[in-house]
Structure formats: C-alpha cells, structure tokens
Image (tube, rainbow, N blue to C red; front, side, top):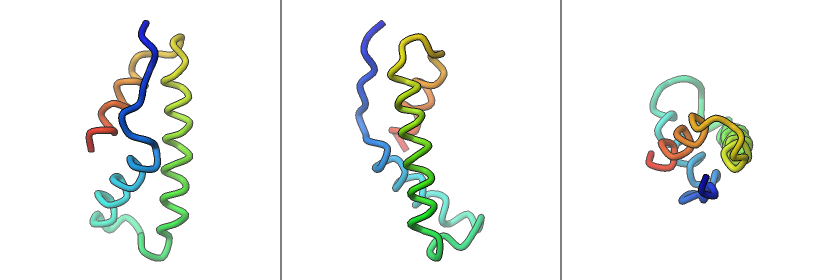
Length: 70
C-alpha cells in the first residue's frame, strides 16, 4: 500500500466545513466559532492519524479524500 499523503491539512478542511455549516442554522456559529473550529480540527487530525495507519480500513482514507475536496 502506498503511503497516505495529505493534500490539505486538517485546519484547512475544518475552515471549509465551518463555512459550509454556518449557513445551516445548526447553532450560533459566530459565538462559538473558535470552539467549533477546534473540535473540527481535532477530529480531522484523529482521522488523519487513522488514515496514515495502513492496517485501518480504506473507508477512512476515502472520507479524508472527500473532505479535502470540499
């Protein structure tokens, strides 16, 4: 298996997800922006670590690749 190499860093993906979600009326994103971005970024770093382990399922790498394209 090839080494998993990222095209976009978790911080970049988190910011893009935040921008997409803030228009969905899920919560008051402006008041909680730093917390939401931090949570997203932490989750994406965990996902990145999962993707880098070649023994984990391919579905995690697929998810990361899709998120990179948002």
